[in-house]
Length: 447
Image 1 (cartoon, rainbow, N blue to C red):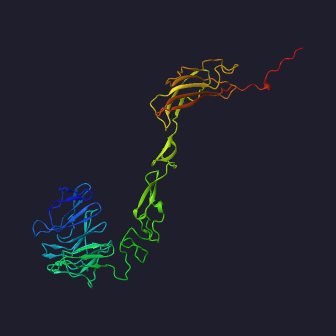
Image 2 (tube, helix red, strand yellow; image 1 turned 180 degrees about the horizontal axis):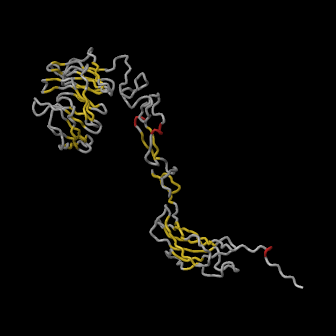
Image 3 (cartoon, rainbow, N blue to C red; image 1 turned 90 degrees about the vertical axis):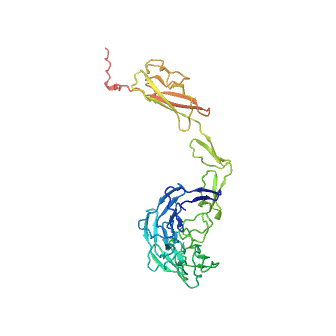
């Protein structure tokens, strides 16, 4: 067959796999899971005399297939084994043409580059098919199988880093067999069942590390004698980051040190809690607990029913007057334009209206020091959205300058009043320097 399906155990439902680009129909092939793709390879073709050296990569997230390269791929075969190392698929052994020729060759396939590299045959186990293979974290262990009609009780450990083989122990091993099963426990390979001359109900436990040998079993760079407190888990070793899981991740003798600080909460009013083997959890903070809702336009933020609630600050109007300084100080009326908008914390649809324009000096101050003019504020329509008016460029020479204060008001989106003001300055007019008394003309004396 050349089809398949995806089974969802959560819903107990099946969905067909796409046939577009799928590999040719086959039997007795292998499949590995990379973490994102299924890679199938090899197998027997439509006739008993045909073996295949092709395969495909299936992505269940996109329901799509990509072919595996045949350039440099191992010889076509079926009843072989395949393991996933974390970045490579290793194919080994198998038979050609229904067991007419058994193989002790293989290949390492890199899906990132879609390329193959051969496995060494130096010290490799004898050719076979219907054997088993497991990945220990650092090595592939193959065992058992059949060569032609002879059952095998031998095997080998393959190191892909060094492309080298070491034979497995034979002493104390299970009875020779083929079509059995094998799995990796984290420290042991378990073999069970299969067929010799008849079906078998026996098995064996294989430890790939000889007694007294200190070896890194999980490939994390640390051995048991080197301080690795769990050499079957590459995430556990000296110097590892401690996480909330009920495990001594960094092998310092303490579990989950740091407690709740190992966890984070995505919610302001929920505190993180480390529950050991239960992982990270969150718990609600009491109402009234101070918090920050991340909004600069609120104040007095407090937790309330799991949410962080604050009181919105009053809206303000920002007023810009142009020009903001009236010069020259010549007693003329000058047109002033106002630009009015809400500040960053306010908004509303009602246009601001001109509330008032006041002057720090009277229209005509006593004495001859402001030009004897009146009506210094003109064309201002109070209570309307008036943004242009006239102010007189005049100030009392005895003062520090005239200040016009312009105020606008409106209501924001919550119906609250919003007010803003700005000023226009009329500086004191500079007069000429007075004549020094020593240079003033002296009175002519009378007889």
